Structures are given as structure tokens and as C-alpha cells.
Image 1 (spheres, rainbow, N blue to C red):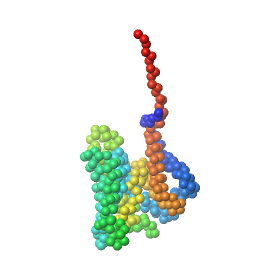
Image 2 (cartoon, rainbow, N blue to C red):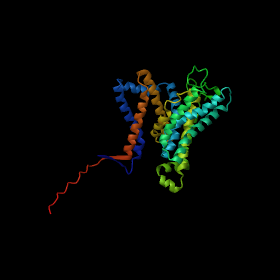
Image 3 (cartoon, rainbow, N blue to C red):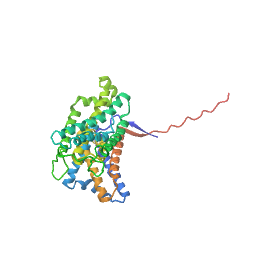
Image 4 (cartoon, helix red, strand yellow):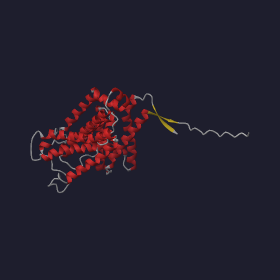
Length: 364
């Protein structure tokens, strides 16, 4: 019989080394997986992690894919610090794209510098609205936010599918489920010719600085963290648990919504069912891998973007299935959680206790 016993003083250094341990374990198991698939591990690892960065265009694609991951993970980190587990960033991204993209479709025939800021604002509101619904269910009906946020991902997807197959479908799109292409006033300007890097990069950098200041200097961030770590102490101090829930889920939804509108107004340029390759789910790993710290999230977001790029390269050059990207993401999360669990707890074997021997009956 074995037990996990909480450590009295978990090592702070090991907590920060936990992502490195998880990365090494992921690479080891990934090498074994490549051997099982009949691929030479050294070559596969080079294609997966080195070759995507062998050109300037590869670095630019890394920035394009890292942007939405970082934006979403920043919002999720606020909720995770408050022990609110939002699994609905994918749906909040989708609703942000719908709300903001709807402005581009509504004013498709018009040009003006006010269209793009309005799209970003509506995208943020769309994500915030989708995050507010689980907050309402949590505070008024005590519904588990992990389940409600997850289920709302599918509702958001079906809303998008209805729109691009129905009222918002491009009449000249050969019956494909997609909207019209956004005009120049509704797309983010490119900042580097020959690449897909656009002005959303500045939004991401501004968000990183803003959240760093918020988490390090803000009393509100401290209240949210205390509410999650020590609910009784927070209640005694007069911190509102309902307010913490609302703020955490609305902030997370807002950031995911901004990421959604940055995608459709940037690299995609229209609404279609393939807005995201799973950024909302991958950003959960990014947040934890970055230790819920804005600067750590930047590094982990870039690494997760590299996994996406490496998965694409592996599909093209090694004919590996598309699922290889998800496998590496899952391995990374598994080893990260396992490493954290063993750092926070001590693994001990408990001795088996034998049943007491029966007492012999004595004759009267």
C-alpha cells in the first residue's frame, strides 16, 4: 500500500524546475514513440523542434501562432490563481471571433479607421459575455465551472456553424461554410512584408506588460489569489468570493475573445469553422507551463507554438498523423502535473497491518 503525503516545505527551486523536468520526460517518451512508429528519433526531433526555426519565415510563423496562445493563457492564469478552472477558452475565442467578425460583415461595403477598433472591442465583449454565463451559473446555482465552461465550447461552435452555413455564408464562396473575406479596414495591418506577422503582436506585448503589472502590483490580483488559496481567510478579510468568480471568468473570456478577433482579422481574414487548431485547450498547458507568470507564459507560449509548427513539418516530411501534435501536448501536460504532484507530496509505502490474532476461548 502506498500514500502521497503533503510535504511540509516543498522546494521552490524544484517548482520552477518542474517544467524543465516535464520537457525532458516528454522528449524521452516522444523518442520512444518515434521508434515505435519506425522513425529515427534524432531525425524526427530535428524536424519537430529545430527545422521550423531554421528560417526567418519559421520564426515569423512562431510569433503568429504564439500570439493567441499567450493572450488566452494570460486570462486563464488569473482564474487559475483563484482556483477557478476555466476550460471554455475555445468557446470564448469563438464567440469573440463571431462578435467582432459580425462587425466586419455588417460594414463590409464601408471603409473607415473606426471599424477595426470596434471589432476588437466587440470581440472582447463577446468573449466576456461567454465567460459571464458560467460565472452566473456558479454564483447563483453553484454549478461546477469546469463542466459548464467545457460544454459551452460546443454551443459556441454550433453557433458559428449555423452562421457560416446560413445567414453569414459568402454567396460567392461556392457553398463552402465561410463568410466573405474582410475588407482592408477590417483586417490587422502587416508589420513585416513577406510574413503573416500583423499588428496583433503589439496587442500581445501590451497585454503581457499589463498583466505583469496587474499580478505583481494590484490589490485586486492579491484578493483573487487569496480567495482561491485560502477561502476562509478571504471571507474573514471581507473579500467577496462571488466577485472573484465574476472577475476571473470575465477576464479570461475577454482575453480569449481578443485572441479570437485577432485571428479572424489577422491570418484568417474571414469567419470559417476552422478558426482555431485548439488554442483554447493548448493555452491551459501554456498557463501551467509558464507557472501562471506573464513572462513564463511568453516562453511557454512560444514553445507550444513550436510544437504546432513541428507537428505540421512532421506531417509533411515524415507522413506522421496530425494527432502527433496533440500527443506531444498531452505528454507535456501529463508530466508537468506528475512532476508538480511529486514536488508537493512525498511518496511513501505504508506497512500492511495484519489483523489481530483470534483469542482462544477459555473453558469455564
